Amino acid sequence: MWCVIPAAGRGSRMSPTAADLPKALLDAGGRPLLAWLLAGLGASVTDVCVVVDPAHAREATFREALSPHLGDRRLHFASQSEPRGVGDAVLRARELVRGPFLVVMGDGYYAAPLGPMLEGWDRYGDDGAVLVESRRNGGTEPVGWVRAEAGRVREIFKSISPGRADLRLAGAAILPASALSLEAPDLSPRTGELELEQLIAGSVEGGAVFRVLRYSGWRRNVNHPKDLDRIRRRLARRAAVRQPDPERPDESNGSTT
Picture: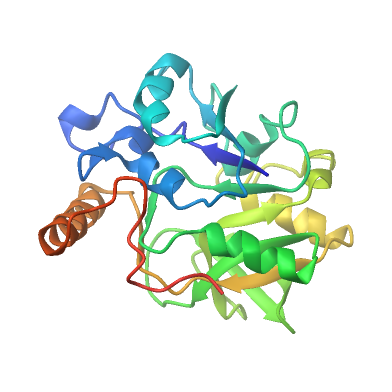
């Protein structure tokens, strides 16, 4: 299976020393943040496509940073030269990706591995899946919301307000290959970007069935310096308790089901 990782975002809100790096390559526990994600993808993922901004970080920079953590996977790149949203980043990989594919944000940390998500999806045989967590109130930035019925996506959208949605998108989804050939939705009038939620909603409207898979572990998106600090502290505590395995994420805090 392919995995598409949007990683063109800059660390502009991070410390001055990190502003020149993509957030996905910021150090966390002695390795790039994205390396922890790669470690938890499982054996099902054979090809990884990282979507980068070539004006900000060369492919060679990513390849050098990630090669020690790829294992047997093949690394590919697609370019997104303008920040036009996660959905747009995914479409940039359309010439490479084959079959159903996983999408995971490159600036997040998952304490529990995502490999079981793929296994859970395989059991059902649905067209796609979204990884979700329990709804959390509050917050000032738009997030992805999911309304589910009978374990399947009925509605998905990005907003500050959850409306009738009872679940929150947890930064990962499995999309059918047909999502790459849909007529691209209009850009969000609020952000001027194409959101991942719009691609999924378009697939659902076209008849695709998306399974809802719950994520029960600790995770953190890196939007501010404090987010990266929390990840680093967690990894430091883990290292103090036991010798870390460099190719396995923290599996002590839940799993996908």
